[in-house]
Image 1 (cartoon, rainbow, N blue to C red):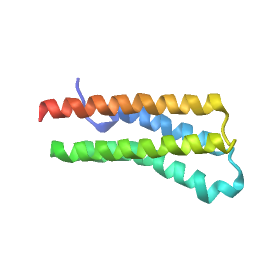
Image 2: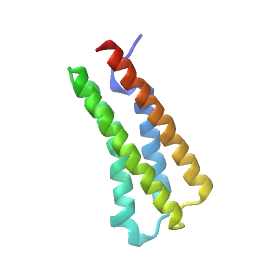
Image 3: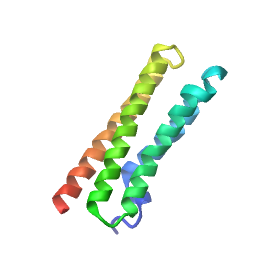
Length: 121
């Protein structure tokens, strides 16, 4: 059948699952972090699938590659946020590890997508 929409991309689907996970784990953070780390982490997580979707809808491969790079940058930022909240004691090590593992999987998928686009370019 092929890829008809960005929704068909496994990397977009995984990034959406990551958004849900980030929202779930940030509900337990201290209220004083609502406008700090909670807000930053949620916005950053949402930007990952949003960048993938936006890039997929553009006609030029180089534009899609640019948005993949943006998604990778947001992913690295989210990884940093996760490590910060673990160090602050807001997130248990095993829960942080699970979220970080998900980010690594998405990084690998983005890297593979980028390589496939370079081959087709």
